[in-house]
Every structure is written in structure tokens, then in C-alpha cells.
Amino acid sequence: MPSQDDALRQAQSTYENHMRSCRQCAADSVPCAVAKHLLRLYNNARRAAARQS
Image (cartoon, rainbow, N blue to C red; front, top):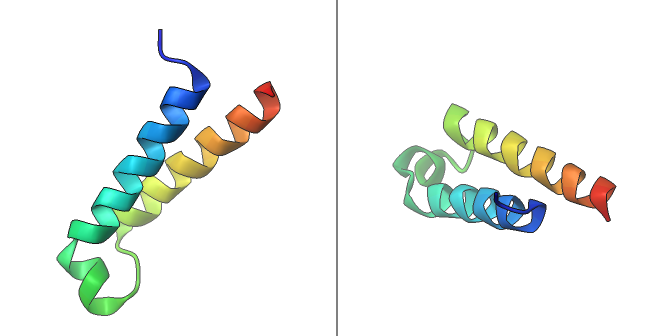
């Protein structure tokens, strides 16, 4: 079972990779819907990790 730290690192990595590779995010400098969703997941994982510590 993955730990909270693993989930946090995975969420952060996924968000950062999307921001680097998404043409819409790069062109508009405004996050697309997928980026907003991934950021929400990352923030939720960060909050869960903070509660666990």
C-alpha cells in the first residue's frame, strides 16, 4: 500500500509534468481544466500528508 509521501510525490510529479507538456497551459499561461484538477489532487495529498505528520 503506498504511503502518503508516495501519493504526495506522485501527485506533484503528475501536475508538474502536465504543466511542462500541455500546449494549452504553455500557450495561454492559464491552467487548463486538467491542470486545475491535478492541482486539486496535489493540494488534497499535501493536506493529507500534513494531517498525518
